[in-house]
Length: 314
Image 1 (tube, rainbow, N blue to C red):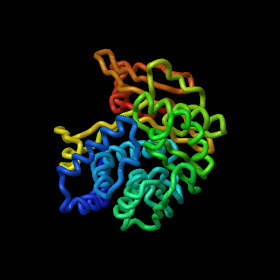
Image 2: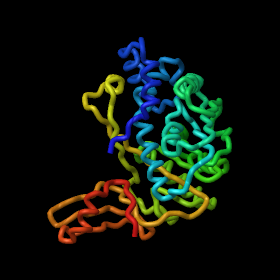
Image 3: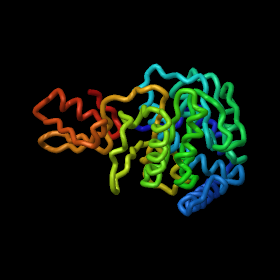
Image 4: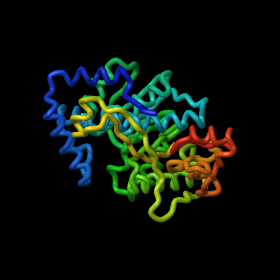
């Protein structure tokens, strides 16, 4: 299923694009992409035009990944409804928009970022949202909230700081902490370090793991997922792309203060063949393959609806 930006956010971006040079935005987005691959950070975004180029190129994919994560959270915790949200390293406010779509009744939203150009853009995009505060700061000055979100934040820090940073964020989270990182070995390594430190501190995994046991991933394997999103014409121009969709790979972690996990998570694409479907699962017993034979028609029909990242209940 595709996840697109909400209509209100798309309209706000379109309004800011009026009169802007698409060629200039594409060039800025390409420079930002090259800088990130070389170890750059959001500090490379210095102007209003830089911030807009970043939003056009990266906001759709970041939104899709965070919104997919929050849907997984809602599945395992259907009664969870935060009254306050703090978006750490908010950039243009992408994760906040995803959280407000997941829980539209949220009363208070704080977007925290150290980059002035991104804060200014976040303020313009959120101009019509009620009770949103946009403040200067970084992971060293985290506000308290029911739900703390940090999306693509640990990637800008040395891997050695991932666990310590996650613990600081956890201290400020009243009910839940959600971390989202690129679905790369490096991104998962940061998630894994954060997970171990948070469990040791007494936190419980809500998703993707269905257990608080040691992570069973070994060797070159890493836990990640994929979310498809549609590309607008401006998005395609900014990314120099020629297909109308993008697949965003991400790793994530949602931690709570009470145990909620159960079942098993599909941690790779299911494999269908003539005899049936193989589901790569992770649960408290570790990594395993579950096979659903075609001859079991009811179970097979259900298994065919399952996808990478889905929860399989006992």
